[in-house]
Length: 374
Image 1 (tube, rainbow, N blue to C red):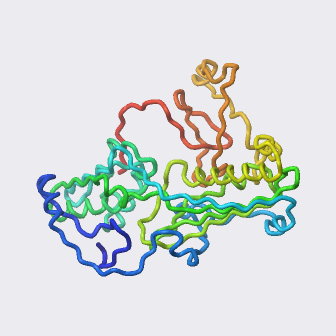
Image 2: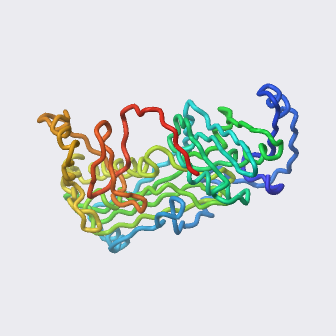
Image 3: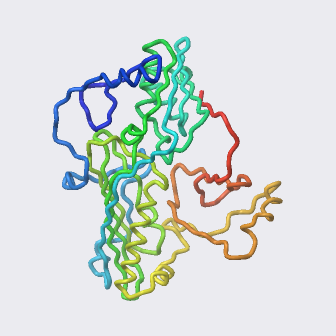
């Protein structure tokens, strides 16, 4: 709505405000938009030759390239080598609860009731776009509902709701429809992973090259980081991880459950199975042979966190998971994250400090809470 260019299907071009849901729906059905067709890109195969390497990822938090050693030389001299590629279609979040925003203006100050995980981001974004002081924007999230990543960013409908409320001089509520959730709240991008593994005849890894190719929007460089686990999960002296992007006619992709590494680890582990077949090794034995106790920074990966103190120490001994028996589970995720505050929350007990850091985990039901940013 800032100009007459349409960059992707589903882009907002008009907002209709009415005094009832039914009138708003009917009025919106009367809006007719005329536009000219132009060449477009919506799939990797349409513009593979236009791909470029991203410098930064994840909103600029992470580098687009990671490397150590001499991958090309190791691949060229490998006793055993496999080259594989995996394609993944775009995924959409679609939680049961669609995003909803209510905007209320009072004496030049704006209050937004938004189903968002990122109150501060909403406050900063809307204040900048509308030219308001931060102190004049208040964001309240009574209920968030499901999100799976789609409610971690600030989408156009939030600011549009505030603009509509200011224009009509009354509170305005906007809730996305189910079809609009496919084009208005981000998605996991279509992507392709290419992996080359080099190893000795007995299966000892000597090189890993992992390249991700994906589609971003015309106006943002976005890619979920996907090569972090590949660089750290196995002992390997030579590694190269890159992310290449194609500018397409799509909205900007965003976080989705297990951002990036979910598919990155799938590609790596499937390639490891292929390597096991190529060298005639048992897949589990191959992984044990390449197991590492240290990450590329020389930090121990597997170690027990310090036991909690105070009242949490009394509860720790009662945890079922500390009793003897087959209760072990494992998974992989980026070892070092620039936004990691090294604080964990045990799902049903309480906080403890981890030397490695981790995502904040919570599986138990939480009491109803009110969260604000003001």
